[in-house]
Amino acid sequence: ALGQRNWSVSSGSAYYVSTIQDTWQAARRDCQNRQADLMVISNPEEQKFANQFKVYMWIGLTDLEVEGTWRWVDTTLVTKSYWTEQEPNGARKENCGNIKNFGSERSWNDEDCSKQLHWICEKRILQ
Ligand code: 2F8
Ligand code: CA
Image 1 (cartoon, rainbow, N blue to C red):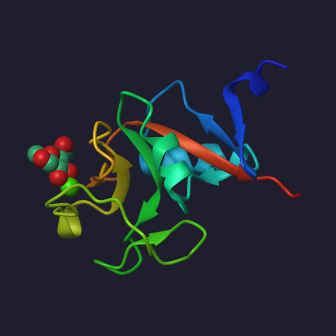
Image 2 (cartoon, rainbow, N blue to C red):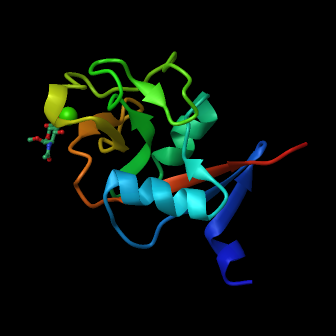
């Protein structure tokens, strides 16, 4: 089917990369509509995967609940992180995480959630 072509499968998860841009909240809703959620980066392979797209990408990273406490959409705390130097710098203005500095392993940025960006969904596959 058409949809399947947009998913790539790698080590226990399937990833969907959006063709359009939208806010972090709308991106999350889109992922949920696909029986998925925004991408949770749990290992260096996933970090590398997320860095391959040469445009900014929303991921499932937010401190909307408690300012300064960055969590993944699956509610886990961020353990190994890949913030760009000087990030996160947005305090209360920037509460959603994206891949911005994709030329560097340390690619994460905190961004205004209402910005319209591409996004990556992740669906965990039972095995
Ligand atoms: O230099 C990093 C910095 O770039 C922008 O601010 C100038 C980003 N914000 C917007 O684009 C709105 C920041 O999130 C980022 O930290
Ligand atoms: Ca920032």
